[in-house]
Length: 363
Image (cartoon, rainbow, N blue to C red; front, side):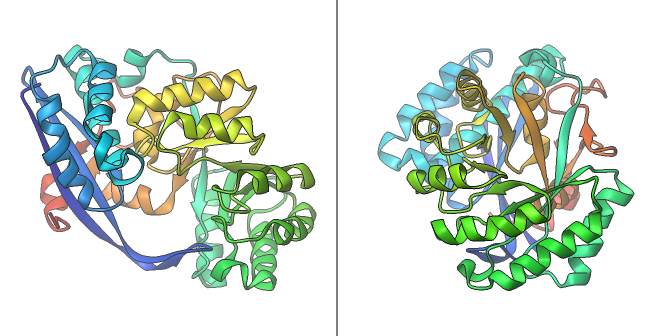
């Protein structure tokens, strides 16, 4: 590897956004760029701008000079380098971004789409529309849902519930019912509480979810409460899911050992990049479960196509908008699926749109 660089971009939201436990008006993207053999690989993560400093101060020196072919070795070296810099958290974001760039670089050096380097298990990756923020008006929610189902042909959609730490259950119920009305009976409807509810509160709310045919109940309680997730899972009909905050492989092992989820989620921009995401998928398969990619859809697509136990990939509104703004070469989700590698472009196919991105540069 000849060089490792990082940059920070901050992109405002279109409208104020919130889920059950957090609100925001902008999203920060930290990119990692690696160079070798006249080629360049690109990765990124979503989170604190401090991840760029971790890349610069802790990871660049570890990766520079290594073989571009040996990505797992580089991943292990980075993980060891941040031992005292809190591997779970910001350092995990940084390791993930560089790992993603390394895989992109290797595929570009070989002139291959990344999915062909990893080895495809499928040609198409199912996606689901994700957004439906608790700050949306009824009209905003309807417009977004009908855009996914009507304009793009999605057959799976998700909204946020658990407004204000679960203090507005009646509005949660009303929004779920309105979402069902907007998408019709043939569309799978999912909800995400982002850990806003207590255990019994989540079980009570699930009765309404059953009535509206909701099949996916994401983080009904905090993902740190494994016993609570298992308790809710045993008491409700929708699939209980979690895992997006996993930064290390043992985290996922503990979640699976607790029988806490029906489908495991993992985020390639947090868990250690593609190197570790593939291991998480194998761990889920060994427990008889599927895996779902959390957010950052264009970064997940090629890895998602390489695992046999994939359920789907989250087509998250914020990240889709940002990735289509800052980068070129994105996937087409029309019909509710993407086909990574279909264009024949090497790597993950995405490139920074420098002129557009400069407007959002913040570090």
